Amino acid sequence: MPSINARAGVFLSFVTVALVGAAGCNSGVGPAAGSPSNRSGSCPNAQDTFSKMLPTTYAIGVAYELGNNELGYYSVGTAFAIDRRLLATNGHVARGVLDAGKQVRVVQAYAVQHGTGQVLELTRALIHPDYQTGKSTSTPDVALFTTKEEMTEWLDLATEEDVADIQPGDAVYATSFPGDVEKVAPVIPGQTVPQATALTGAITALRSYQQDVLVDATNTDIIQHQLPTSAGASGSAIVHCGKVIAANNAGTVKVIVSIDENGNLKQDRTTVADNNFGVHVFHLDYLVGLFRDNALQGEALPPAFDEQQANQNNADEGDATDGQGQAQQGVAAFAGTYDAHVGDPDDLVHDFVFTVSSEGNITGTASWANGDFSLAGQVDATGNLYMADSDAQGEFAGGEYYGTVTVNGQASGTYEDQYAMMQGNWTATRQ
Image (cartoon, rainbow, N blue to C red; front, side, top):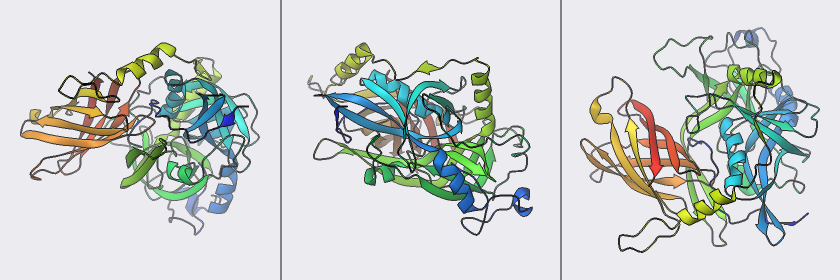
């Protein structure tokens, strides 16, 4: 095998979502739980829950050619076993693995098991047919990976009866490979034995993709929770009373990306809020049904290298100019629009432009009816985008844009302004 350069300084623009387990109930460790099943004493305690979860937790990544007979490794997210050769994760994690081939020559897509370091070869990726890139909190952001090797332990998905009575305050658990830990303990297939991080928290809300309906057990799409997840934990199981009730997929985390003195990618993350989100198990169960019925074939792994797309990506890096006709290498310009929700005032709709440097720095301007606001933010190595707007005089509270930038020059996501009580979708296109 080629020698390893695990911290290669290659800025990979994989497609993922930008915004950014397990089992068990309360046992005196973590939050108090109040579900009927907890009160009946039928739930396993935290230690038993984590004992079941940890062996089913896998770090997902890709190995790619660096040249000079060397390989680079890139961690994309987390997945959990649900059958002998089946892993569950997020749609944006699977999309990140698939789109790696548009940037580099991927030689293997892999899963590395917690506690043993066993490496599984991923053979196919199947994404929920209704998932839309950049809309992880409004479309079912779940996916499956098939594996070449068999697994011996897996988690059970909660049934309709299991989730009928879940409510805010119920204890939840997750095991994952967060990105901040990755900086200290990188996952290198065949060389390291990764240790998943065990997290405890509670459900904080049940939400539907439709914001104008009364939410109940029949229309819950999102389980909001306060598990302290971060980027890298995408795709981890959220477990309550021993069974998977959701797949963790989004959170309010600000990502700061920079390049160190050796040319390697460096990321710092700041929590913007305490609430995170998971896709309800109903959507995962539906996807598994499609797979079992051979109604969804998915895409083969590793992804084929798209040399034409990769060359275009490299050529595009010099497209923008500095106003004097000189190309600024690594600068990409975007123009976009925020569409207010139906019933919102027309002056909430606004246009914006921004540029992204080769280091991932964002600068730009948002043009509202009451004036222009400056934009600043970051895009991380997987395409996750965060930026905020503010006026020069500080008269208006700023809002925040979360989303993703794809390799084909599209960007999309959500805009949130807690003070103005507004939230909606935005789209942008590379110019």
